[in-house]
Image (cartoon, rainbow, N blue to C red):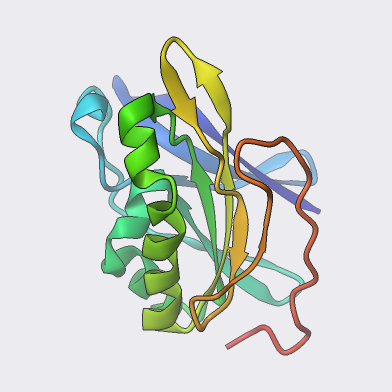
Length: 168
């Protein structure tokens, strides 16, 4: 079994916004966010897009804003990946959160259509210090269609069976 989660990584005096893959209680690999927002200027951008495998399923990771850039999805597809796992923290000032409420999945869907990939996203939700996240946790198919999603602004567990013919 593998699990993926995000963390702040410190390596050789640099900070990275990273996602790790854990398998059998050991680090199987990591991905460092490559496209940073102005508010993340204290992080060092990553430079690689590794692909991982579980029972023949090959997947790559993206962190939040990375899904706005086609080269991240292309890098996964070029390594025979079939899935992007996207970890996000879309906590924003309320007015901006309202603007982006439905845009996150649209950008993610474009990446799926461009490369014929599936995408599973996990996002935070809630309010804190005048900021809000609606939590667009979803599954998007290679046609760019949202095939499963948690209700915006609600906690939950999203279960979805990917088709057996999933791999590229």
